[in-house]
Each structure stands twice: as C-alpha cells, then as structure tokens.
Amino acid sequence: MEDPEEKLNRIIEARMKLKARFEEKMKQTPSVADDVPKGSGKPNRHGMPTIPIGQTATVKWPVLDLGYQPTIPLDRWRLTIDGAVENPVRLTWKQFMDLPQTKDVSDFHCVTTWSKLNMHWIGVSLIDLAALVQPKETATHVMCYGYDTYSTNLSLEEALKPDVLLVHTFEGQPLPKEHGGPVRMITPQLYAWKGSKWIKRIEFLTADKLGFWEDRGYSNTAYPWRNDRYSD
Ligand SMILES: Nc1nc2c(c(=O)[nH]1)N[C@H]1C(S)=C(S)[C@@H](COP(=O)(O)O)O[C@H]1N2
Ligand SMILES: [Mo]
Image 1 (cartoon, rainbow, N blue to C red):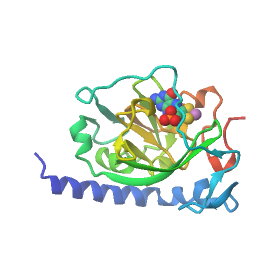
Image 2: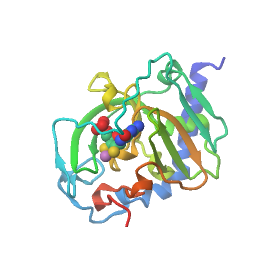
Image 3: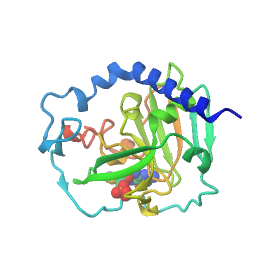
Image 4: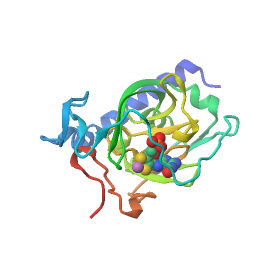
C-alpha cells in the first residue's frame, strides 16, 4: 500500500497543477470578474455583497428535495468519481475520511430567495478529489449525481474553486439526513441547487450537459450576484 505521506504529497502536487491549469478561467468567472456585483451588505470574503440581489437572510434552514430522502448507512456509502479521468475511484467512507479535510465557513444562497449565512462546514474539497482522480486534459465539466436520482452540472472553473466542498459535518455535528447527509456538495458562489445532497457520483465530462433543474428551466450558470435564476 502507498505510504500515507507520499499519497498526501501526491494529492497536494496534483492540486497545485489543477489550480494552475484553471487559474485564468477562474479569474474570468462572474464572482471574480464582475465590477459591480448586484446585492447589499458589506463585502464577503470574496468581495461580493453579503446578500445577493433578491435574497433575504434566514436563520432557519429550509429543506428542499424531490420528495424523497434516501437513507445511506455509512458501511454501504460509496462515492464514485469517474468519466474523463486518469484514475477513476470508488471510495468507501473510510477512504473518503482519510483524505485531507477542509474546514470552512460560507454562505448558502437558495434560488427560492433565502440565504443562510456563516455556515461552518468540514469536508473534502472537490479540487482534492479531482487531484486524486486526475481529470484528463479534455475534461471541462462535471455532473454530480445524488442517491435520490438528482443531478446537477458545473463547469470545472466553478467546481474547482476552493470553497466547493463535499461536506459531512455542519456546526460540529454529522450533516443531518434531510440536508443531504452523510455527504453533500456545497457551492457557496452559486445557487445552492448546484450542490447535490446525498452525493453518490461525480462524472467528469468533456462537454457540458444539463442536470435535473438545468433541464427544467433553471439557469445553467446560477450566479447569485447577477440574479441569474432561470434560463431565458
Ligand atoms: N440530491 C439532491 N440534491 C439537491 C436537491 C435535491 O432535490 N436532491 N435540491 C437542491 C436544491 S433546489 C437546493 S435549494 C438545495 C437545498 O438544500 P437544503 O435542503 O439542505 O436546504 O439542495 C440542492 N441539492
Ligand atoms: Mo433550490
């Protein structure tokens, strides 16, 4: 078996390469490139107004799903990462928890106009998972699938931003099932439907493809500070 330290070094090195590869594209994404982002409140850590246009801060955390909340015992939980990658994997819970863990505080903006601020998360960053599987040069997007048959797509320049995480812990407690536990994705810079609850599979794609809501009239890009909710 590979030495844990060597494995960690390999992930860190691959992460740096991915960062370099997507740096220019990330700089052109709206959350970095917009001169006058729409919203109110003091700038958040990315320089965006805390409350995006048309949103209202909420204290409670509403639940949204397709009417079905799957139960996934940890011993049966698996995360498949495949598609346009050099090294596809199917991770067990232990393998997932042995990966580098990222702690972060971020905001959550739902397209139905509520925003929940300062949420404390622990999880594995998507860029570290990408570092593990090594996307091919031709990879441009990912499709994320949930255990409930949900799906949602992201460009790699959004997906590989450092605050996109696969989280298992919220405010020091295991992520509750109704919010996507054991593991969900979060996309703080985009509307929250871009983060699959009960995540089961991440497929790297060589062309864009629409997920569940994107195919039903929601915006493909989902940028909160542009009020970018629906496709025209
Ligand atoms: N697997 C799965 N992920 C999902 C959804 C879903 O129905 N199934 N709903 C999405 C939508 S529309 C939103 S707004 C957020 C809601 O997350 P919450 O229920 O934890 O607030 O999850 C997103 N991820
Ligand atoms: Mo939503």
